[in-house]
Amino acid sequence: MNIPPPISPRRLSRLLDRLEGLLDRWDRGRTPTAELLAGHDVFRWVGAPAGGGRLEPVRCFRPMALGDLLGIDRAREVLERNTRQFAAGQPANDALLWGSRGTGKSSLVKAVAAAHFPRLKLIEVDREELGHLPEILDRLAPHPGRYLLFCDDLSFARHEGSYKPLKALLEGGVTGRPDNVLLYATSNRRHLMPRDAPDAEALHPGEEDEERISLSDRFGLWLGFHPFDQETYLDIVRQRVGLSEITIDPAELERQALDWARLRGGRSGRVAQQFIIDLKGRRFSS
Image 1 (spheres, one colour):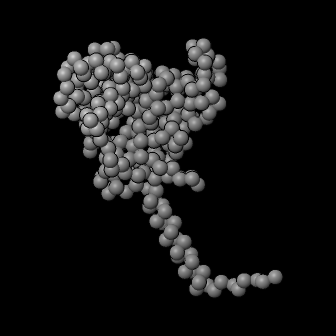
Image 2: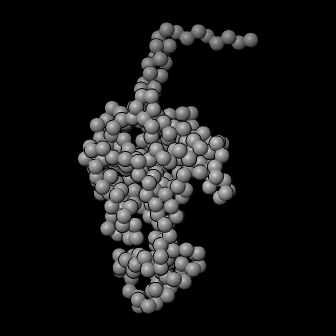
Image 3: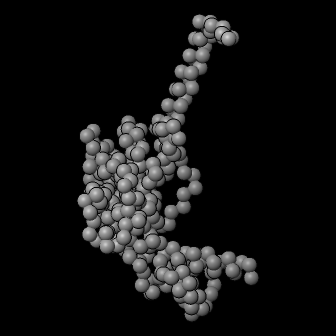
């Protein structure tokens, strides 16, 4: 059996110095610097396979202008006021935007955040990364800025426990929550019920769902988004056509837009945008 030669004290010292340097660079990569936060307005949290994570700047961020979001006037007014209060250092509520797909929930969050750059920073946290919330708060705590955490498409599968860090954040937890951190979340479900729950069970939940349902009560703002009526849908189509500088007969535009909505089985801002993309593509290829 071959026994490796002993490591000399000098070599061991060099190895320890290298290890210390690697650990120091790793820790600096996890801890956001003032320069990093000042240099960007939008970040996403990237979790590490072995635990931990870091804030990664988002360099391609194209939010819609607030004035271009049609059909959601009340929600836009309330969320913009709440965000303005938060950006100014005043009290503000966490917000849950719930309702039909494609009706502008995520677009509204991004638009109101962008309207207050650089006074606040937007940080997207995937649902799968909710377990990192305590670390995210710990990383942001030393910095004086205002930070809006954004969790898109939030809901929970049955018997899933990943909602617990979110509940602790909303309640403040034992150690409390920094005053400069706010949470906005979107969901297709008002009560964040499990995706696989039958409708009857959603209306008459059992005890095992009570804690999950009470989670939504901890958001100070509930903003509902509902399917658009035909005229609102057509207004959005006309607006998008104007922004895209497409020339088309109004009657023909309306006919094609309604045909597209029937094909998709619904009317929403997302369906309108997808129609405009198709319209532009067809005109380019013809």
